[in-house]
Amino acid sequence: MLAKRIIPCLDVKDGKTVKGINFINIREVGDPVEMGAVYAAQGADELVFLDITATHEGRKTFVELVRRIAKNINIPFTVGGGVSALSDIEALLSAGADKVSINTAAIKNPGLVDQMALHFGSQFVVVAIDANEKEGNWTAFINGGRIPSDKELFSWAREVQDRGAGEILFTSMNHDGTKNGFACEATARLSESLSIPVIASGGAGNMEHFAEVFTVGKADAGLAASIFHYREITVPQLKEYLQNRNIPVRI
Amino acid sequence: MSVDYALQRLGIRAVITNDHESIRTADKVIFPGVGEASTTMNFLKKEKLDILIKELKQPVLGICLGMQLMCRHSDENDTPCIGIFEEHVRKFTPETGTENINKVPQMGWNSIYKLKGKIFANISEESYVYFVHSYYVSTGNDTSALCNYIHPFSAALQKDNFHATQFHPEKSGKAGSAILDNFLKI
Image (tube, rainbow over all chains, first blue to last red; front, side, top):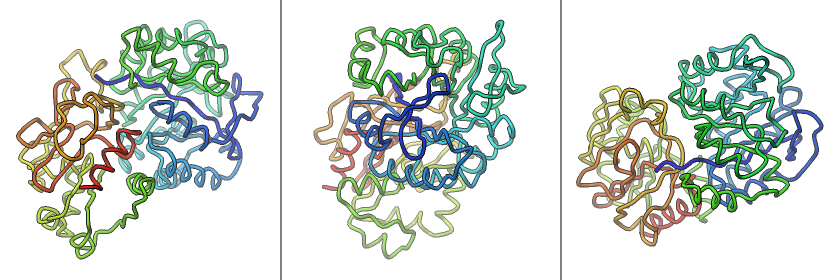
């Protein structure tokens, strides 16, 4: 049976791992390659590395880091953050990334999703959507959650699927950093309306939250950062917990 | 690239080439692949690599699209393939109404079973390995491992010196490294 995936996310700034709380107040927590290798050894199913400064600074360091990750880590990983041109994507894929996620660039230029799918294949294309709910309406935000766009979460996800995205990484800005649980209702609605996998992100605070997002939220994968980085829960503990709840996981 | 890195982790230096002489004289040949069947087959034909691969005598390992192209035929753009394995390549088609449960591509870790042959020596039944694919190889005489997604399909094939995996051993953690290592030791 296809397993539900547990994905630690590592935000990278100037080659170091950080975790933003509600997308601001950044603090350093370690070396991305070293941390990635630890997670892989612990049984993480996949890793996501987001270059959170990429929009403002050069990308060369990040491409070099991606090459180091690929050389050292034996599980799949997605990279993203400030990716806006096909040439960036090509550089990241040839450095060894398994998937590239785009966010702001897709909203500004939706045709980029079609081009990525055409040039590299849908399996390499993850569209990340940071969305905020207000009075029942989910709006996608750009520039690391700083600026609202004119896209509505569900219709936008459907559109990128039709344009050739292979996967959706949905972050609820309302839940991110709160540790009160994932946006299960919105994740379920997203997952049920799409035929591509959905990674849920934002709000993980304990193991129960993962069980909820896989059952109630119908997510294909659950992503979290701080609870893993600060060792509040470990991947093996989490997987054992999920297995005991009859949720299929790779152990 | 990822396969090359995985081989480096096992202490093996690989040469990435389409040169006939280098391929013919190699100790082992790995034929990985991602992409679309007809475009890749056209490239192989243009380079006459389709004929070369079929005639190789040393251990050969096809991965993902590589495995599919070693079959007889792929439904992806109705493409005649190399024809080492007699199995057919078909598209995952979930029943109407189940598309949001049986998502295509199959992406992620799934367990493999009924493992046969040298590359699965010491690999436990129900080991998890990493898959990303929209097309699958049907089951048949050459099937050396099964996986179940929507229905059972060939997770691996083997015939004579030819081995192939639908999953990515280079991305499948410890189990994947062990499978690659087994292949290198044949």
